[in-house]
Length: 370
Image (tube, rainbow, N blue to C red; front, side, top):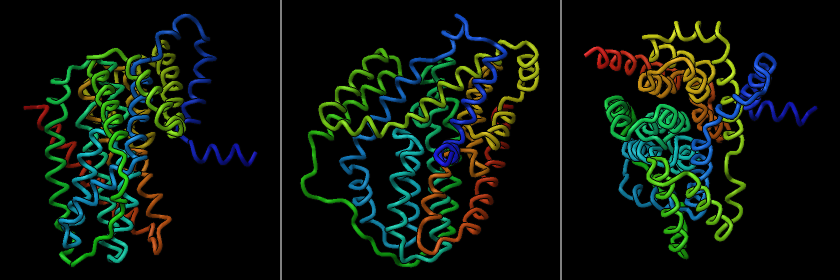
């Protein structure tokens, strides 16, 4: 019983998705239609990307890049700006959660001697940067990969949809970093400069490139899957254990849930009517309650407007702590740090996130009307 409770607490989204899928299976019993629910390409590409990123993390490439950039920092403000920019741009390629898993611990080390307010503000802005930067590429976060695949978007369509919100987000983030003080700071190196495995680096970079080519439909998905498995078996079998299988299982459960409720006429009509013309606001609002990945998967069954849905769930990653589950990563790291003030963190997080959420939704609505 204790193990079950612990699992439920550690994987609330997976448990919710599983229960939702099971409930709908009583309404729509398993039949041949289930075969069309699962988007195989999304699962394969997520698995392969997570393997490639785990390989890059295992050789310390992110820490090495961070050290090089931090050598340029001299003040807390400059340090905060560097971390925000790192999270914003790296999340485009390695996903928002991986960016935060990598750079929040480094932030806690680099800013150990900084005051509490500056540390909280920096981590909150890094979290927003990772969530917002990740929306600019199909591989930046799971909901983008899902929507990009489901609605058969082209790269040009994707960029045209997300670029305005991304550029505005970056400007707002940089303006907010001006709230950080100009106090002097010190830099502690984190990466071992000796024995850097250059061969592994190139192999993982090639694997990552293969994954990107698969996402952009240049290569078939099974190629990147085979490449990921072979690389892991040859170079580091532990990489296969670092894949977030709970995320893959969550996607599988939501595929079943969404597929089933889309076949229930009353539910289909209800959500279709609510969504029509309101995709941006409805998806952003639902993300506040169940987070943006399941919101994207659930609502995708009731609208053909994939661009507005994508904008809504990505911008909707701002707001509450659970709007984007990646935000919980930052909070957990900070909460466990020495001298943590969780109440202050949540207060600052809420002010910054809801402020940006309102601004971006308003501006996006204006852009849509133009």
